[in-house]
Image (cartoon, rainbow, N blue to C red; front, side):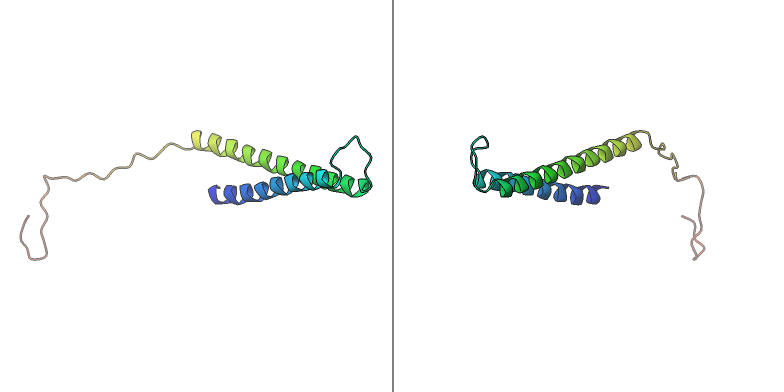
Length: 102
């Protein structure tokens, strides 16, 4: 989960960065929204793309957060550790192949 989580987070960060860049490009084309602009169609298109990318990033963050919560719940409610132990018995005598006891 950790590796997949980092990959998903990287893609989400790229989408967030792209959305911010598109929003900046929108304001570069038409700096003041209330003022009419000659390139309003291009600005509207960039704004639509920015909102779409931001929505995708928000959904990805939500999915990643849900996966983190699910992982925590599974980790906390998982099966108990087994209590198998190997203990030495010092009273027994073993013979080596040479026949000597130790």
